[in-house]
Image (cartoon, rainbow, N blue to C red):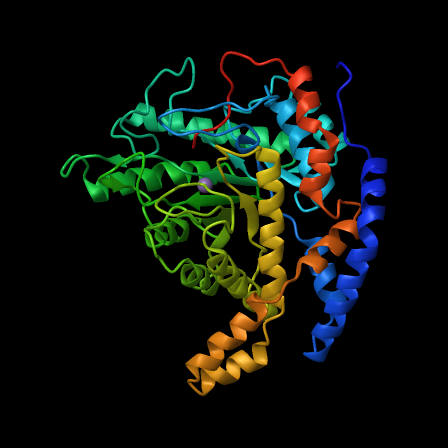
Length: 432
Ligand SMILES: [Mn+2]
């Protein structure tokens, strides 16, 4: 492989040295402030440092819409470039130690070399994603009218086979989960028999489930609409829960924040899935209107905080038999994807840290006394606390950058990649 530009540890150390005195001052001030309320800053900093969210391989290329895609410069051309970009995000934030791959988009020609390259970069692999919402090159049967729930048995079998192949690829990479999202549904009333379509889905999903290794999970991802615009087979968390329950304990529900109707109370869905042991994990993003795949916390940071409130509360109660998987699923159309993914990972840490600051005894008392105003005040007190020094200190202590976006821009990484990665006609950056 030819020489490629890398941000060096020494670069991080040099830049951090300049920023550390001010950070230390802010951190000490926050320590004193939190201790007055009985919170130990070190406990929170350690928990933030241990937090990790998986990067979507399809998120490091510039995204787009069904109208157009405006490519950025120095975009990743293949799996190795994608991993190289993911490694930068993790090197600077120390918050993204794993990558979630999407097949066949990321299907490596040499799987051993891919795993080895990731290990050299300090990256592991989270859930692998199957793709039966579009036709792959050379595919025999089309998914135009569905995949796992298709009326034709041979098409269903082909979709099952692809998912099993994804499990095999995931095993070779050291992954422990398969995420299944299908685009199956209908565009016209009467087009699809609701019950039969779900029966066919369940039959196919059972065949995939049977191929899961003992220590694997299958995450089922629901979505309200799109690409199907009248009905979707796995449209909501209720259908998802029913399917996961039918399949067995290894099947869990995956909550993609953008896959709900506007104004849906997602934090309550999270609570319900936790209560019944079926929360598999998250695809974090934000949305204004639909499945916008905007940067996490960029539209509704309070919602993200409320979700982390449920997660921290459940962890405190020992409600998880398996920790939920945290993954980002975003499309970056007008920003440098590396910058968006870094700031999104940090945004998750921010809401996580704030959720740990909630005075739970006071909240419970307010709930018991039906003191609605004080209950909200208790949440807001945590939400309004600026925890930026905690996040920066956690990064610094792990060898990451105090100011990741600042350091990234200073490094000129993208300009280097512009030279190293000549533009190709069509890149596999995801529009999903
Ligand atoms: Mn998703």
